[in-house]
Amino acid sequence: MTTIVDVADYILNKYGTMTTMKLQKLTFYAQAQALAVTGHPLFEEDFEAWKGGPVSRALYAKHRGMFLIHPGELTGTSPQPVAKREEAIIGSACDSLSALTGNQLSRRTHSEKPWQEARGDALPNAASSEVISKESMRRFYADNPIV
Image 1: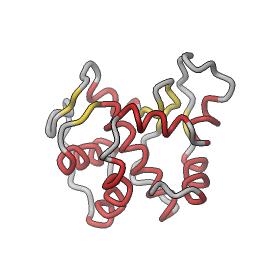
Image 2: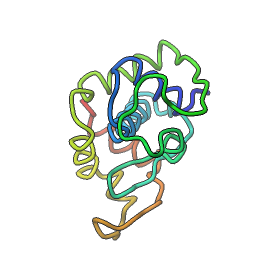
Image 3: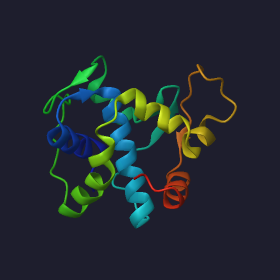
Image 4: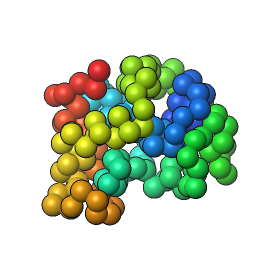
């Protein structure tokens, strides 16, 4: 199965250098699009409801300490190509969202139910490692298309 690193590598190669915050949010929205459209995830890795928005620990481990990330810079990885069908799903979510900044994408996730539900009663600046459920993402984005 495709991994989050495979998807992140594809996004970096297609859309170019970006902040790690933006990369995290674009991979989140690619996953959300797959769940909404097909009912199945692009990858198994989860996102947590961090104060800055959804973050995958698996992806974070590959770019920790970086602010900007360039194509080919995901550390310690050998990404595999994504399938054509997956490219179409990623593109349908990211083609328009890639024009937004990481901060704009973060604010957007904060206004959406999957992140809010996972955060629960956590204070705005409180740390959280609560998982954003794939089912919550599927339900919300099926009813509220990403683009």
